[in-house]
Image (cartoon, rainbow, N blue to C red; front, side, top):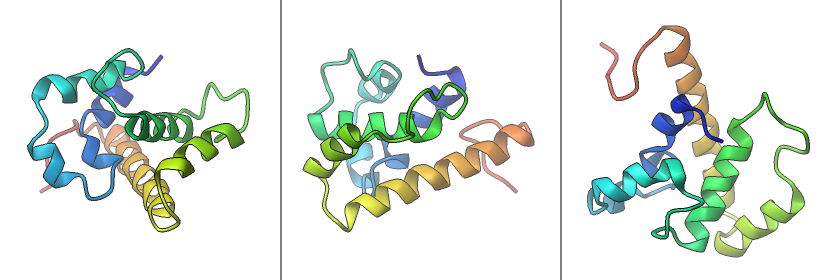
Length: 115
């Protein structure tokens, strides 16, 4: 189960898909909102589901009972993304988590800007 904060973080696919900013502009609000229920939502491709699972696995630290990214999940993600894309995905997830942890600490709500 994804927490409310994680849902807010994950609602913009540009956070987890490098270069996705242009495609987000063409993505319906309904599809973006369905990220919270990505396992059940029919609108995600196998590649998108693999990335969402990767992001969730890397992000959810407290309830980890196995390796952060099991070999099977890594293999699934690697089926869809190449050697240059995989590090970009990991960095994107890690940076998003980093900024979300800062925002949580200072009680800055998602979607607002610093300044």
